[in-house]
Length: 396
Image 1 (cartoon, one colour):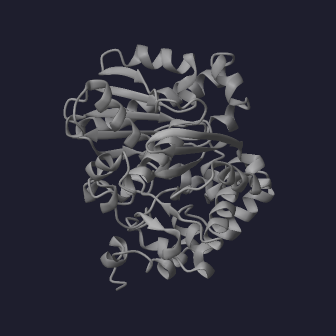
Image 2: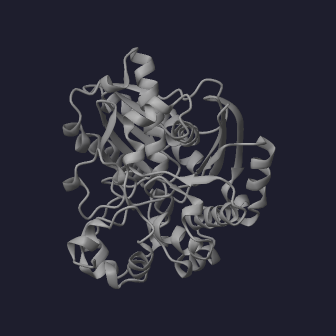
């Protein structure tokens, strides 16, 4: 029996999904703030599940499939901060000290990952969209977030769900996945049952609840500096000053709320249009994520997308009651990598062929002089192949 645990580090809750021979057999959700303050709660949840073959750990922006013990213990925290969270110890420490919501999840992720590595618990990391060999190279240039690891995971689960719904094999699946999470939105294109394009949360052409999405470069220049904390403090929360539930239950409560709601919805629609050319005749648009559960969001998307392929709501795995689809996706990928029930799916999506890190395609030379860029150069050797950007600029 293959027993795997998938951990999705959501902006509001950390969800833990256990699969036993491909079926959901364990579910647990822990408040992200609580997990940051008391990471032992996550460890106790793993102990509650019992014996397992692998933990698919929070994988942030994604890397090639990598076991924790591939990275020396003494370098692991810095490596994880650099390639999984794309930040530095000082940057996250500063944001956590200010109580910034998005930083708390990063803090919890580092603490959990470091514990797993130190205890030599069998754990691995999975790719993000940009790591996949099914994404043409020209689409990756000067991009980082084409869909983080959790977005890839939910899209992999989506491929399985659409194939089941349409009673077809994976190679016949063509659809667009829209994941609207608490902090970030993303749109992923699937053609022939493989992920071929993506617009991640920091690349969508408008805000989500925590992040601004893509920004006019002139705005960034006018601000003068932009930190990791700014990535998750420039979304609609900052502008409407309402918690998610109060905002989305009545997004037209005032003019500020209405404007930001319209900007978010329009950004999702524009992102769908950005990836449609990459999919040959998508059969449907599949909607998932915490934000998608609100009728205000679903209703307006149904109306504005009435001339597009049909909009469906993701069901997730049978027997799943409480954990998000992203956590289920993490577990599905882990099961498949161990040649379990979802082995054929993972082989088809070519997860094992993913390469490198999400920082590999930054060609702007100034990157290498930043604190993150210097750590990237220092620690990049713990991957199968040299980085595209380091080869480009002759670092090897």
